Length: 215
Length: 292
Image 1 (cartoon, rainbow over the protein chains, first blue to last red):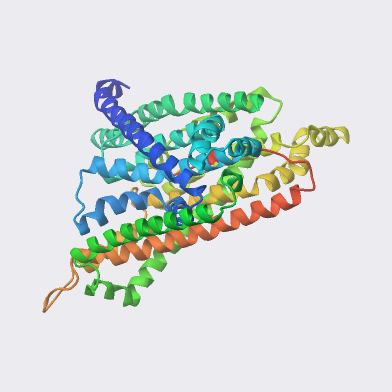
Image 2: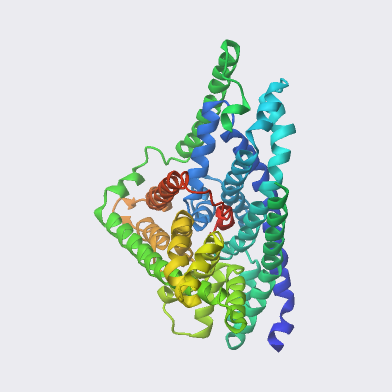
């Protein structure tokens, strides 16, 4: 216990890195995922195919493999970036596929009459998507989206295996330094993860119930 | 839904879609071309490093890696389903003493990274094998997720099912086992199978905790062939990683895609059956979105 209190600083630093990884990847994945989701319902076939292929491939690829690609394979073709940047890219690329699916199923959950009405008053595809469909889809998208970001928080721990000292890595390194107190360190790390994941999970559940009644 | 977002295209719209398609197609081609150029600039295309894929030893090693991956995944999947069923039974029991610990267990292990759970065994027992650590981590995490899946499956059943079981004199546990679980599993089968894909993908974390699975094999092959020297100089160099990585990635994606396809086939089959029965919306598919 004493060792944990004494070494709280590196753990907090790791926690901050985890938050950074999660935040940056969440924003990037949101942007990329929404673009991909819109592509998947667009009238232009090649864009639909590109979106579908992206989701199919990325969803069936382990995140560790994406990290491995960024850190070991990409440098072979002269793409050299910092380890942290690699982590940002890997997490964003991976999470975007899940955001895309959430956006697409959200769009599909808006009742057909809405789209028909938008079309009937002469709106174009872009207009009806951006002013009628997406705003309504957002309410169904938000709960699964929170769950995706909870998963992202947990997934950011994979960066520990690829030279980024985030929360899990800070606990692991302390454990190597003071093996007899290992359980305290990992317990502390677990506490900080739960600090994010449990409240977010509860929020997602409550929002889901709220949205369910409103429909 | 998709079809009502835009009209059936007339001649002008068709022309515009055609133009859009050509631009979109060119965009895709440009992306591919950019990647291709990168590869050829760095001498990977047309390089002799691809010859490494003609070595039977490479495929033997990748095969062993795949077997190790599947072994860990299969054992963890069985254990996780068992753990999930036990947790659900406990959580749904009328006794607080049983349901509370099960709820806490589920919430805690669901909220932690799999990697952290794989690391705990190493700290508790110093002489644990990486295989055991991987299986323990995967079982704890996925067991908790599966418990949640089963619980929402049971919650989606009409309450008459449980009442009928109790009315004919079955105990709550027997009702759960004989009446509710079989139906819940059927409703949630596609979600359960998708979770198995997540589990399979997470075995790759074994790479980080030194379990020799497929990805670790890729790295070991790189170290082995990348360092080989013949009389004429270096045999392949570090670029040998490229073909080996591609082979490993294709194996991963192929295995996972077949299981995913199986899951969506199950979902379609289920939908067809459900079309005649009242629709049960469980709405939790998105919940499981994305393990590592």
